[in-house]
Length: 107
Image (tube, rainbow, N blue to C red; front, side, top):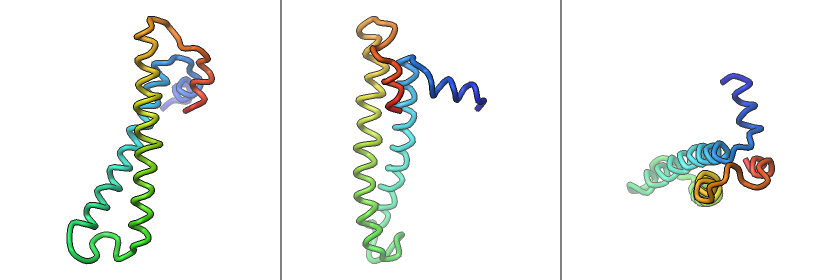
């Protein structure tokens, strides 16, 4: 990406673009949470030690990390912030939301 494109994404006040950034970040976090769930299911798929080499603490940590990642980094930014920034200005027929710079700080 060019430096100007990155600066445009970081300093934008367009609510629809901010919503797309939220959805893109949520998609990245959701993909990493999905990979964690595949590893956990692979570990439980057979008898004995499968993928994590008998490290039960790592399995417990992955379970907690997967839950927090999916709740706080996938569902909340994607559903609340991402879709909210995309749909609320369209539903209200307004060009911008209030306090657009504060809205962008949440990214």
